[in-house]
Length: 270
Image (tube, rainbow, N blue to C red; front, side):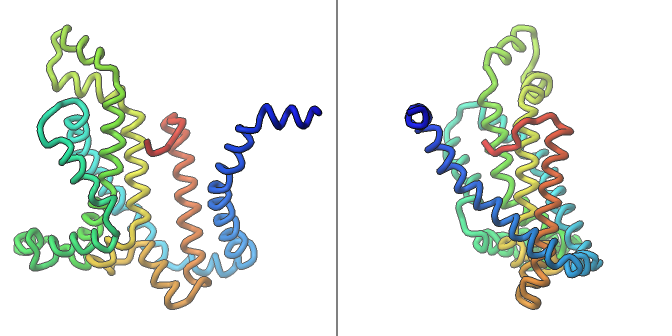
């Protein structure tokens, strides 16, 4: 009777836990399998692969390129997010739809768009080539590709954060004589710090994971996802698995460090 009453009382909670945990277990099992296969059972091979200088170089390059793309997104995307959140104007819904195109289209299509614009004969690539700025098989092409696919995540997150701020704070600032610039810098940005940090981390993480948009504009120098693809085609799981596992572990520990350093309780995309 006690078990029946307990089950009846907590049936919906059990239902939520059971079905919700299925997706969580998919991720956990995938990580556990990678750890057991490449770190426990083949530790020597794991050390041999990740100790390779080129592997370390590609990982550093990946983190660096994504970091630069994230900084550019923060500089230009924060004002745009504020504009879309706080002001009403015609065509805003169209702008929001355009900004989300990189999320909706296939990664290969995003890569083709970037290549068409920035290759040596492209609309942007041709004039910049005359100035000595190249994008094909260059880190500049990698950064542009990562910027293109990751900026909607940051803009959407920060825009939603600005929308959640009570408009009374802005009105109080205006009543005290603050102009729009001071309201933005002194009131809105500090109140939206959590979403800015969350958006930045997710933007950076999205850049690290990108493959399809990068490979068309810059197969070389290789970034980590491209290297994993190359190693899988040439060496199979023995060569690609350790690099993939290293990326997983690095991203996991970086997320934990950022979590505690920033005091952000939930690094989640809203």
